Length: 467
Image 1 (cartoon, rainbow, N blue to C red):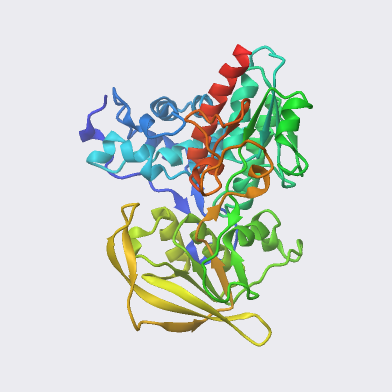
Image 2: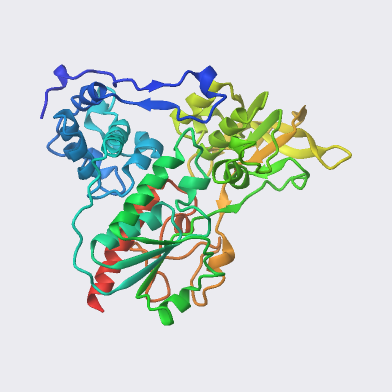
């Protein structure tokens, strides 16, 4: 273990696009580490005897191993070390909340800034891909077993990546015309370039995973039919939680009101940002309000700026200390000019004679006692109502379980909120059917969905091996 006295106290900074430039383009904001910068940052790792960082990773990446390889200049080997447990390192290095997971457990972080694990993961994955050094790992002999995965988000991709290496035949059924799930339709280009997502999916294809696109679970794909008539031995449901949510206030039916799901899907997957090359219908508001304070709210606000908005406001009912978004996303949004209307809650949306949104009425809030989640509950301040003009409101206030597939599977146990009930290994109430990710937990992080996928894949393999 290294002595902390010889360690650089602060992280190696990562270069970024200038805020004034990036607010008007969809190119990626952080520019990544150079080789020298990566080695410099990797050298900050203490090589702990008990690496706590690994315990903070939902997929148990051997962090000290890959960081040590980067320090030695073995960049491609570092990427392969990550891939032993994570199928999506280039994605996780960009969008995982490392500050509350692996980096939060970093021993160095007790006295100095923690090692920038996420930035190093991104560097290793990018280096391997950009230098055409991706290798196909050895696979177990074919088992003759077939697994169907419904949904190609992080959970589904992880299940497929693990099971294909164990010798099982895996087919992913995806409702959209591009695989990737929320990685494609939910996260903007400037935070996660789609080319990188498709490269990760291409890697799974090279492993032997089959993709069936434009196949809607519960419509063109029937779970019980897969098991009984189409020869599949197991099914994994990773369909996410994409049912839009709105506040129950007057005016949500006006033109110019979106759920964040629809707004981001139109921009990301349907490429509305490439107008006129892609003539995807989307309202381009001049004065935009995004209701919510999570990462999705930041994504929607920053997208609206890039689509030409003159002003963009985040309207959130708690204070900045309670914002659920990553600190980095809040910082980037502020740099780019997003305004924050905190301790503010909408009460009504107002429209013009044509049924189009024209204004929002809000009320000021103050923080009271903590709620069930531990955050202080916002309380309305009487007589504090005010109204301001807006021609586009985007609700980023959470999502629900999409009922299309859950209601189509007879005997599938759901909880009171409509999410699938599954045990710690992802087993559902139906033998041979597993589930994981947001459709079980509700909206969570990419890496948490991947963790659920890893556990399910291990259990599915044991089930298939015992049949």
